[in-house]
Image (cartoon, rainbow, N blue to C red; front, top):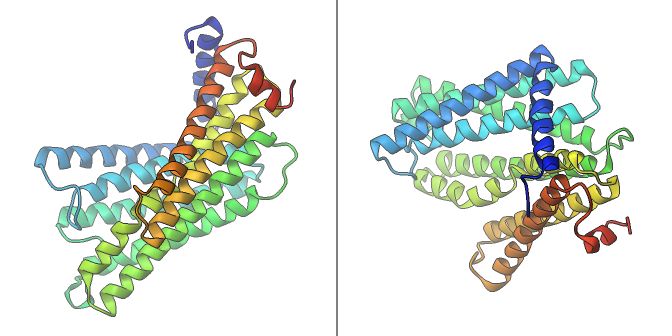
Amino acid sequence: MTTTTPRGRWALRAMATDLAEAYRSGSRGERACYRVAALLLVSGLVHLGVLLVTGGQWSGPLSWRKPATFGLSFGLTLATLTWVLSFVPMRPRSRSRLLAIFAAACAVEVAGITMQAWRRVPSHFIPPETATAADVVAAASAALGAVAIVGVITAVTATVLRRHADVPPSMRLALRVGFLSLMVALAIGVLMMARGTVLTRVQGDVAQAFAFTAGLKPAHAATMHGVLVLPALAWFLRYAERPERFRLTVVRLAASGYGAFAAVVVVVTLFGLDPAGAVPAVLEGAGVLALVAAGVVAVRAVAAPQPTWNMFQKWSGRG
C-alpha cells in the first residue's frame, strides 16, 4: 500500500484545506462548539497528566481517570457532533439550538465530574445521608445534562433516519448506523445511572453500584464513537476517484464490521458471557477485520488514481 503518491499527497492537502474551511465557514455557534470541545479535550489531557504524575489508580470512584476520560470523551463527542451535523440537512436555527444545548450539557457534565474529583469525593452514587450541598448540586446538574444530551441525540437521530435525497447514500448509511450506535450507548449509560442510583439509595450498597457500572463500561465504550468512525470514513471516500456505488460498498463493509463488533461486546457485557470464549472472540475478530479491511480499501482508493482491487470493484457493482 502506497500513501506517498502525488495523488495521495494531493488528497491529504485537500482534506486539510476542507477541514480548515469547515471551521472558518461555520456559524458562530459551530465555531463556539469547537472551542468548547477543545477546552474539554485539554481538561481531559490535564487530568490524565495529574493521574500519571500522582501515580494514582486507574479504577475506583476517586480516581483521576474520571475527569480525564470524561473530558476526552465529551470533547471528542461534541466536536464530532458539530462536524457531523454539517452533513445533515437541517434548518440553521435548529442546528444551532441543538448544538448550543449539547455543548452546554457536555460542559456541565465535565465540570461536575471535575469539581468532585478535586474535592476528592465520588461524582456519582453518594448516599443521601452523607451528601453535602455541593454533592446535591453536582448530581442535579449531571442529571439535567444527561437529559439534555439524550434529548438532543434522539432529535438528531430522528432527523438522520429520514430520507434525504441530497445526502449521498454512503454518508446517509454512515450517519444512520453511527447515530443508532450512539443511541445504544446512551441507553446503556442511562441503565448504568439508573441501576447505580437504585443500589445506592434503596439498598445502600455503594460498592455494588460502582461494580455494576464498571461492568457495563465495555459496552458503553464500544457503541459510543461509531458516529465518528463511520461518517469520517464516508467523508474520506469523497476524495477517491470512485463512483458512489463503490463508496457505499466500502461503508457497508465498515458498518457491518463495526456493528458486529459492538453487538458482540454489548451481548457479552449484558449477559455476563466470557469475552475470551471462542464464539465471541471469533465474531469480534471478524468485525474488527471487516472494519480494518474497509479502511485499507479506502486508503488505497484515495491514494491511487485508478482502481487497484478488481474483485472489490466487481463487488461494488462497477464491473
